[in-house]
Length: 176
Image 1: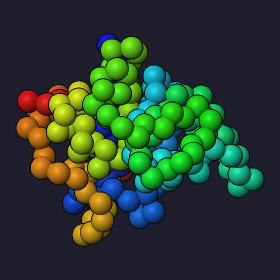
Image 2: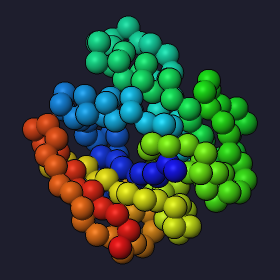
Image 3: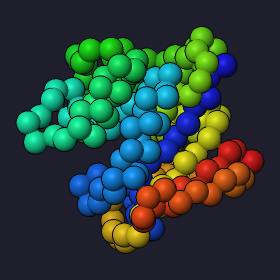
């Protein structure tokens, strides 16, 4: 049975914003290894649109970016959206019955399936489908934006802490 994991970079005050801060080289390598090891990913529409950046090689990329893009492209992806009409390669569009689809993924696959997007994570939290939360804190205070927890924070139990790179701390929680 697959484990559903929600993890994202965030500011100290709990906001996710990929334009305001970027991972250092060690954290970028960590994310590449994480993506390489995933069974697949379930995306909300907005997060999927951000990640489509990795669909095509760019001339300004170095070897690390090419490596991440290759890992991202290889994995199967499911995008939850009622407004998208088409998606890229290795992607399945999920328009209805999120609970049935995610329960089916958990039952059909082994390993980890990442959840990307706070709104999608809120829906899956409400359905009791997220097995682990990974909060990657950066030494930045934004004061605005999209919060990591888009709804009420569920009861959680801390199971691990890790320093990753120079500036990030990962806190790993499971539902209490």
